[in-house]
Length: 216
Ligand code: SF4
Image 1 (spheres, protein in one colour):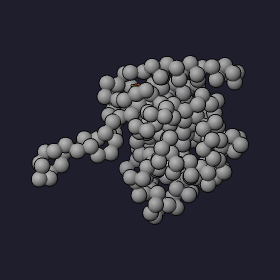
Image 2 (cartoon, helix red, strand yellow):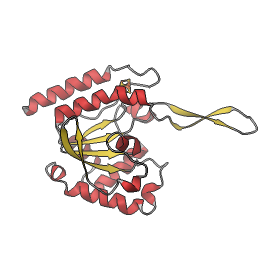
Image 3 (cartoon, protein in one colour):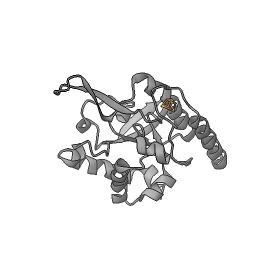
Image 4 (spheres, helix red, strand yellow):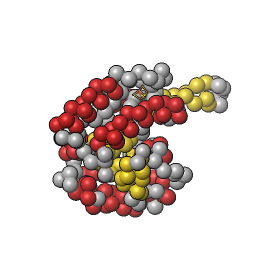
């Protein structure tokens, strides 16, 4: 596909995405990155409430950590946003997780972290991601966090999949996938061993992947 034609198709796709209201429990608007004609797609989990406010993926604390990892391999946030297509498993904010607690105020409900999107929401939103894969025909997917990784390969423990390149097939499209942990402060996995070393290995693999080298 001609490059300008591809850009127009991506922009049209994003306009349609912005109007999606399929999931009644999700908070919109749907969030997406720039319409970048890239052979590398980053796939996150779902935006947080700050991303919904500023209309940009990875716009808050988790984003700062994520972009610091890429800065370590020579690409700053600005370059990243202009060079890599930023996608996600769900494009709307799932809202807070409600947890019942047994305190002296038994059965009191307490907001605790963000809700994990349910199977139906993941399935409904996957149409957007699959269209992006069909349009861009990526050579590399960077999967951020267990929920994103799980959509492409079974994962019980992050140790089993991070630090490796996985060859995957999505609707007859072959490409590589390099998983990363979620950069939110809630996870200590990247800060302790073996996570620390495996994260370094994963970033080194991204840095030497041919599609990443072609971005620069
Ligand atoms: S999560 Fe995805 S499918 Fe659901 S309303 Fe938002 S954009 Fe649409």
